[in-house]
Image (cartoon, rainbow, N blue to C red):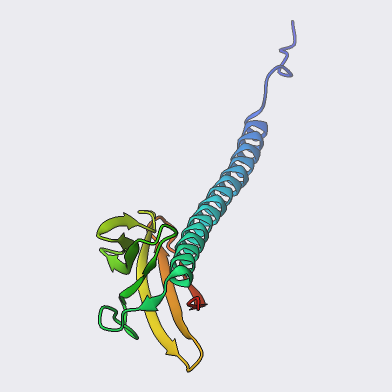
Length: 167
């Protein structure tokens, strides 16, 4: 009589061990991928926030520094959302008026009535406050800008600067 050969194939115990190892490795890999995706999303949101903040503050600084005067009556100081109205003359000698404001969470610049957005739709301006700092020798504008991302994860950051008007 022939002996049965049971050495071919896998036993049930071996299959359970292999499946358990596969599941454990899969869980580790999936958790790692989720962590990497969350980290990437956070970095992207922070980069967007930082870029918008730097662009808005740079434009505010440049326009205020080049202006000749601040319109006290046309500006809203010390509260948010604030409005700042400055005026001056361009390189050709033509007068201009710049108005900085926030409309529906977007920072805007109006130059002689022509409106352009300073911040993108990926962030919301949650605070824009101006303070007028006047001394006998100069005039300056202190600015606080707070932006919040519209993407997940939600990140909020404040930017500060003080700009002295040219003499």
